[in-house]
Amino acid sequence: MNLEELNAIATNERTAQAGKNHHLHVCVGTACQALNSEQIARALQAALRQRGQNGEAEVKCVGCPGLCSLGPLVEVASRAKAQEANELPPDADRRTTVLYQFVKPEDAEEIVAHLGGEPVKRLETPLDQPFFARQTKIVLENCGRVDPERIEDYIAAGGYQALLKALTEMTPQQVIDEITHSGLRGRGGAGFPTGLKWSTVAKADPNRYPTSVPEGIQSRKFVICNGDEGDPGAFMDRSVMEGDPHRILEGMAIAAYAVGANHGFIYVRAEYPLAVKRLRTAIRQAQRAGLLGNGIGGTAFSFNVEIRLGAGAFVCGEETALMASIEGGRGTPRPRPPFPAESGLWGCPTLINNVETLANVPPIILKGAEWFAGIGTEKSKGTKVFALTGQVKNTGLIEVPMGISLREIVFDIGGGIPDGKQFKAVQTGGPSGGCIPAQFLDMPVDYESLNRVGSIMGSGGMIVMDDSTDMVEVARFFMEFCMDESCGKCIPCRAGTVQIHRLLTKIQQGQASERDLHTLEELCDLVKHTSLCGLGQSAPNPVISTLKYFREEYLAKIKPDLRARANGKTKVEEHG
Image (cartoon, rainbow, N blue to C red; front, side, top):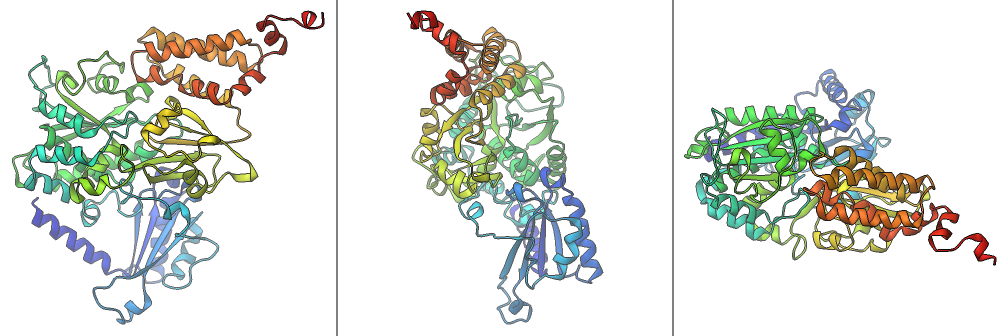
């Protein structure tokens, strides 16, 4: 498919959509599906047929619009009455939009009956609330807008324009330069400059290390999309894969063109069946449209994509363990160097980026590096997607500019702490992150600031805790997770996480002394600096941060007599 054909599809799809007076967007992400959103979509379609309105209205199943705590959500956009009466210019398409919350299948008839008129007040939630108004959507711009199972809908929203622009108007080096100048950093956690990684892979010699690529794969360089999202409470990548799968494929294809790869893999955990289903559908549709496969866009560039399912091991989010899993081996990390950019999958230069990083690529190519670099802070450009969960009123998926404060996220977008309780801490970065206390609420959220207070950006999990939260138990929970998920390859992580968890349990049960607290700190330092991969190196972070900011909670759980003995005194000595 060339650019002219792509534009023709986009025009036809937009024309068809403009011919409808009403658009009913039903969230069919995993969370809303669990609350019968598919039945809601069918009920709306049935109500439209019954009232004879199915010709003037469409029901579109879309990805997650973000406000999960109010789901199932249905957004209704209706053309203005004046436009229906031809009182507005033909090229005007002014619509009023209403968002309905907690929708049930039995609400469908009432919603349809009110199309174009007064909304159903008992279901309505304001669209101008801070949750939506304070966000800046780049990665999530299509989620809640396009049907993830129709490539035509994605094309109508500007999809695949960036890919054809890169293939026909830019050299691979120009693509890399654009990504470099944008300041995009890896959104998987480490924040490594994306352009630098792409440049390294592009320059790597595919013949430097012996290769044994499986039969049928012609490429000697690879692109991998890391969709192995294993952090507790995180669902950012899942929502993008479910709601906008073509964006990921387009980002991968642009990356492959830039670095000289012809084959890619999307690594997704098997616990994401809906994401896998929609990615497979998207791959088939893109292949049929000539946007994946051989001779893309009438050029000499070819790119094929496969999906690989992970068995749920958290360690497989680490890039070398992920590659071992794709190769069919046990998912365990290996020492570096050589780095994957030089010797990765089957010994070939390999580019690994996570879902969110690749989803940023098409808009950067279309709108330019300067546009993207104008968002965020000096060193942290663009936006970041967070899964906002925990003790906060508005839980869900948000996308905010880098540099926004924690206070704005928790109290403006998140709506504050429910039930009249007080904010205590927010944990960022999943089990690898730290717990940030209230004193840092006005701190900007960017890579450097989070690192300074003992946390990390991570992939984007953000768990809010109120004043009823036991911080020792929080640390113990995350350490138990890391202990269970350790691959066992290196002793510091395999044995150290177990010992740290035992000490935390001892403290929680009131059986520990201050000597145990000192041992705990030494163990955390050892595991952090001697583990083989990022899982072990970052596993102590929740413990270290809670010890730093909530030490009094640890001390309060230490037996008084043991505390006195640790100080070199006994009750008898204290009383002479």
